[in-house]
Length: 162
Picture 1 (tube, one colour):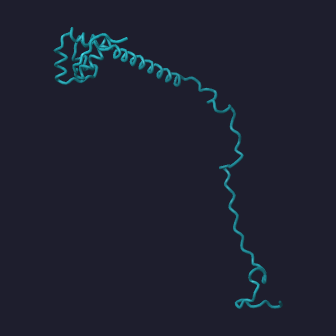
Picture 2 (tube, one colour):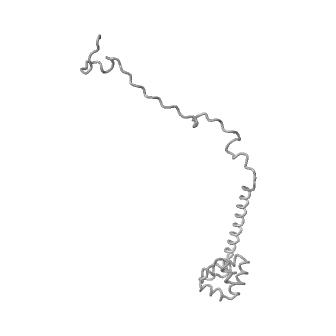
Picture 3 (cartoon, helix red, strand yellow):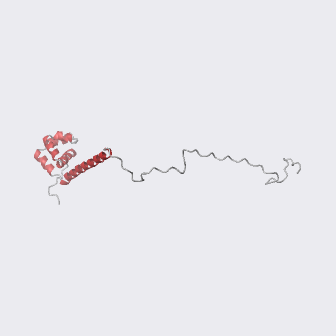
């Protein structure tokens, strides 16, 4: 459904645009805005420049109401949707926090194992020190005449009796 209201092509200062959008989406804020415009802007956290402040105070109530009512409904509906979504999110988070801290017993299992003690270790045992490494063997002396040293050597005297 197309919006049949005329749209203004004039540029609205950012602070006033923000206040108009808030008033279009929130009836309580609209009442506060018409009661005291400066206080409503401060309470909404909207900072107005001196020019914006002067414009806001100079606009007649009828004209301000017409500007607010000319805001497309999509902006107002979006604000209402976001308020509703934020309320739901807070409720769900609060409920989750209550469930986890309300003193409920923990679940029987975490779902990944049965309720039995673990079997005793059969493999590596960190409480038993490892055996010492074997000592290297002393090289055994080969009998004379065996191996590569079978020839006559001038530096070794011949054995007696043989």
